[in-house]
Image (tube, rainbow, N blue to C red; front, side):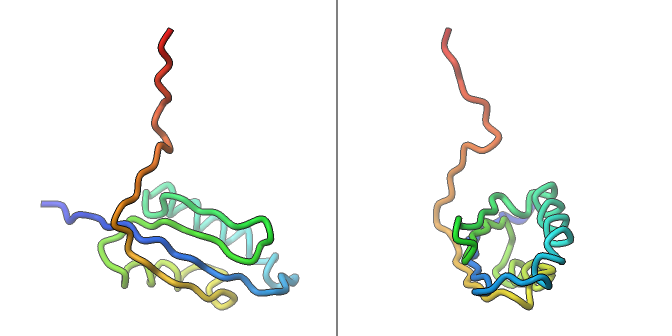
Length: 101
């Protein structure tokens, strides 16, 4: 029987100054994020307009598993983060909109 996956939201905080060393690793970071999205590990990923913090919703069995994914973020050494398990997570992403003609 397949283990039920829980949902976790991660709030991460970016450095105040996003210098060249940060921007240099963004392409690698995006490839890693995109792979986790393709694998249905990351359900949503967003960064605020001020580029000071972001949010990621993970599908994982445990908080430790989420921590392991975050520790593999190429930007891991430049961020701090908080993990919270979600009680409810609803999303319409990927669901076609019903149109009544």
